[in-house]
Length: 148
Image: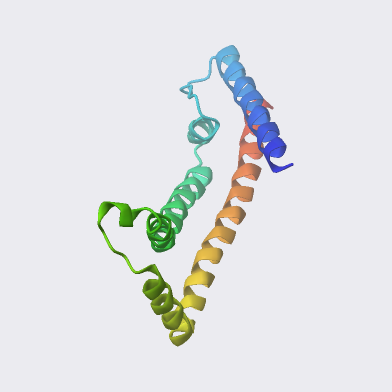
């Protein structure tokens, strides 16, 4: 069901972008045309002398970067775990059992770090969804303001 919702939102955003660009061309407004709805809304917002949407988009980009940074250690561990099955064929010996034992031993020893890490990671994801909802509302507001 999630994929259908994403497809529906994408098609809806394409339709909104088409309507906005048609209105800009029809009314001959001094707004440059963009191929991305978010970039087009930034241009519309510049036309109205506002920058709230642009600020939210910058925050969303920063949160994406920080979420990626926090995901790197987990990604490295997963890659090492996956490659441990095949890497011994190339003459490299990695003791995965020792690595897992050491990891879980340190998780229980430093549980407060794991809790802080999880809170930061999931807090960033939650904040991103909050900003994404605000972004959708601002898109709707700016498009309505332009079309009216």
